[in-house]
Structure formats: structure tokens, C-alpha cells
Length: 506
Image (cartoon, rainbow, N blue to C red):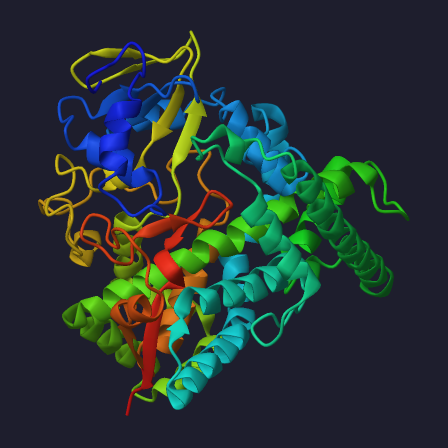
């Protein structure tokens, strides 16, 4: 571990690294920069006494697999509490193993690759609105905060996919999406070292207020889906095609009633309703928060690397034809065309490698000791265990040219030195507890890239933004102006919502 002070733990070391970063940069940069001074085992301890429990930071994928693969290793209490506030109860991110298995199986059909392809026409429909907003910004010469636009887009998409609700948030504000964003900004994940910020006495009331509003809305929508299901059964019986075009909530309802109830019911099951509301709140938050960030950073890196952008555009020409404006309708009619875009997929994966939207954290215990390749043991009792995705993804021991944008590493053969080490790419984590929504996120980002990159040019405008929004202090983190900041919900987002200029391509 770094040099230790018996009075202050590692706080003085942490302060030294904090002082070299913008004040709003996520703490991940601090841990990542400290990690670069520890190369031997790819892991080290940090002591935050008296504010937080110690953390064992991991940048070794071999060791990361040991902890993230343990079925009995749960998230630390502070993180579990934050997610409970966010979702209103135990969700797939906080449940113990047995209920997790049951509810994961109930919601899994709604996230299957086949079902996600069925949702592509809905994503395309929202993508057309998004392209209209880009075209409007280009026509008016507007300085666009791109991630504000992508957040509104991804909220519209996840509400349709999860609940079959059309919010039109890209076109107008609404109570439900505004309440959801307010809740995300209110909940703390323990990142603040200042106890006055972490233990804000007003926060519990706001969390209750926002959560109550969301629960009322989702409960009403679940009741509608249940009535639709009854009508469908009465009119068509138990036909196998009842699943086609269904929302995630509807498929979960079908799965629950079919496999977990003895008889049909005329009333929405209270157990399902309670747990479903919690899971849907999780999907609504996670389904837009990290996806918007990933989409924004993928566009940022593609336009920053025009040679690879040209390859992506050429791939789209070969699959959809050279008329960029026709691609949306072609894709709606044949969503399987998304499976013919390996270069586009590689760009997304490389963007997620360089700018992962979240990390992995677990609670240590006397029964969990992590072991490196050479047999060195790391006890975890009394510690949180943090798999720092930035450090794993940029660890030069596993990633040649670790800090460079090299999507070809996801296109090469296993014998190539660039080929990724198994378990070293963890954007959605790795193993049985990986993110249930990763197929939706990748499908959504690929669809939007097909619709955007051949129709528009994008240029980041941070210099212009900084001139009109002057702020004292550093404005770059590790040489990147589009550095990551906390956006609530545990996700990481580009600073200042990524200001940019849009132009329409000829």
C-alpha cells in the first residue's frame, strides 16, 4: 500500500493526488493514478480512516474474477443502502443469491438477444427524434450539450422497452423522467469523504418523496400491462406468440405467472408487484444513465479518430447502402443487420474500455482471501473490495498500448499480441453476475451509430464552453478535457455534459 500515516491513514496521499485533478473529477482518477505506482500484484490497500472502511483496490483481472465470481460476496452496506434508496427495495444488484436467481430468471427473457432485436424498431423511432434534435442544433448553430440529448434519448428508449410507455422526453419535460433524474442526483453512493455531504438530513425525505412518485406511476403501468395480458388470454388463449413485441415488464409478468403461480389470477400478484417495481426502477436508472455516457464517449472517440470513423462509415455503407438517410428504415425492417457490424462493435467496446461507466465493488469477509498468480494472499476482512475498471482496462500488463484508442484489438485473432486477455474487459462485469442489460445497451448504441455517424459531423467545443463558463482550477484529468464526473446513480459521465458543435454532412 502507499506510505501509511498512523494518524491520517492514506488521506494525505489521497490529497496529493486529488490536488492534481479538477474538483469535480470522479474519485476513480485518484485511485487509478495511485495504482500506476503499484505494478507488482495489481492490487493495494487504501485506508480512509476515519471517514470510510479501508478499500482493497484491484487492477488485476485474474484476481477480479475471484471476487466477482463469488456468489456469496455482496456489495458493501453503503452501496447496498444507496441502491435500495434508488430502487425502493432489494434489486438484482443487492439481493442475496437465492432470491437473485429467481428474479434474474423472471426478467431474463426481456433482455434476451432475440427480444432486444425485436425492440430495434422502437429504438430507431426514438433515434429519428434524436437525429432531428442534432439537425436542429446544426441548423441553428447551437452549442449542444450532447449528453443532455443522449440522456433524454436513453430515458425515452428504456421507458418504451421496459414499460411500453412513450414519455417523449426528447421533445418536452415530464414529471416522471424529471423525478427519476432528481432521485438519481439525490442519492449518494458514499463517494463523498465529507460526512456533512454524505449525511445530509434532507436527503432521506427527498428520496422518499421521489420514490413514492415513481412507485405510483410504475404501479399504474404494471396494472395496465396485467389487464392487457388478461385481455390477450381471453381473446387468443395461451398462444405462443403472446411474447412478441412485449415490454420487459410484460414478459416478466408472463414468466412469473407461468412458472411461479399455481393458477391464473384475476388480480395482480402483490409479491410480483412489489419486486417488479423495484427491478423496473433499477432498469430505468441503469438502462439510461450508463448507456447515455457510453454513447457519448463512443461518438467522442470516433470523431477524435477520423481514420477509424471512416472504417465505421464504410462498414455502414456496405451493410445498409450508401444512402445514409435510408438506413433507419432498412434497420427497422431487418434488425438482424446489426449482427453484421463487427467494426462498429469494436469501436463501442474500445470506448467502454477507455471510459467505463461504472466499477465493481464487493464486501470483504474473513472467509475471502484473494490470491495473485504468484500465490501472494490478500485478506479482505473489514475491507471493501473495489475492482477499478479504469485500472483493469488500462493495465499495460494485459493491454498493449493501454492508453490508446485501438478498436482493432477486438477484431484480431487470439494469436495477435493485441488480443484481449480473458476477463480483462469488464465494462459490464464478467461472469454469472454480469449486467443483465448489456445486450440492450450494445443494441441501442449500435443502432444510434448507424443513424448518426454518416449523417452528421461532430466537434467537441470545450474551449468555447470554458470561455463562456469560466471556472477556477484545473480543467483536465489525465490529459482529457472530457474527463469523467459523477452523474449520480453510481455512473460516470463526461464533464459539462460534453459541449459540441454539430454539422450535417453533404
